[in-house]
Image 1: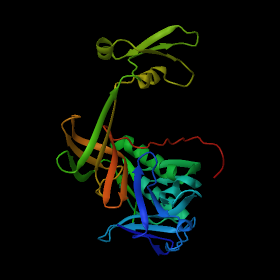
Image 2: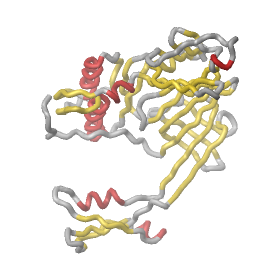
Image 3: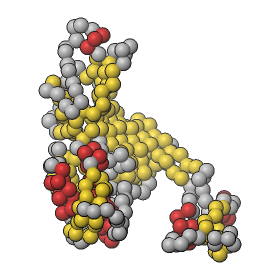
Image 4: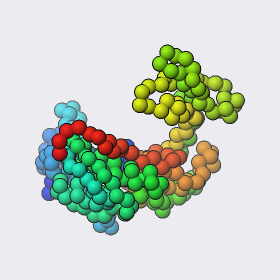
Length: 322
C-alpha cells in the first residue's frame, strides 16, 4: 500500500489506515494515523494541513483513493495524530446549486460537475428526459433526483462513485467478483433477525377517529400475532398507501469480516458461502471498511438483502428564483 499526502510519501510512516465507503454516506473516506512528532525527536518531520491532497495506491500502482484532508485530531497525551480525508464527492454533498434542468440524468450529472469544476468521467445512460427545477438543492441531490426518477421507470438502481478523481454514475449491485468463503477468505460472519419493529395491521381512521378501513398482513398475524398501528386520514394524502408503507416484516441484518480485497466496495454485490449463519448467495454491500495495520489487511462489511438506492424526490412546484 502506497500513501501520499501533502507532498510526503507516508507509506513507511503510517501506523494504520482505514479506507471505507457507505451507500448512505456517499463520499468514501480515508483515515490514517501517524506517530506524533512531538513524542519522539528522531521521527521524520511531517507537516500535514487541512486541504492537503491525499492519494492511496496499491503496491501494484492501482489508485484506490484520491481526496482531501478535512479533519486533523491531535491529543497531547497521545502518541499518534489522526487524519481524515474525503474524496471529491464530499464537495457535491456540501455544495448547493439553483438551476432548471430539462435533460437526461446523465447529462444533468455532467452539467453539475461542470458548474462546480469537478472532473466528470462517465454516467450510466438512461435515455430518459427529466424536467427538474432544482432550486437551492445540494449538487448531490441535483444528480440523484433525476436518476431516482429514471430508476422508477426502468427499475435500475444508481450510485455515484469517484474513480481516478472523476465522478462516475454506475448501476448499483453489479458483482464485485468476490466469493466470501469460510474456508478461504471469510474470517467471521454474523446474521441477526428481529421482529421488534414488526407491524402487521394498520387501521385507517378519519379525522374524528372513526375506522374507515384496514391494511394488514394476514399471514404474518396468523404466525406471529397482531401488532397494530393507527393511520389517520389527512387532506392531500393517500392514507391507505401510507398505511401500507407502515407494515413492517422481520428485519434481517448481516455483517462479515474478510481478508481485504479492494474490489469489495459499497454499491456492488458479493457472494457469500457461510454454513453456520446460513448466509448463502448474493448480497449487496451497504458499507465496507478496509483496515491496513502492520501486516494485517482486513475488511468489515455490512451486507444488505436488497439493493437500496439513495432516492431523492423531484418537487415540480418549488418556490424561490433560479
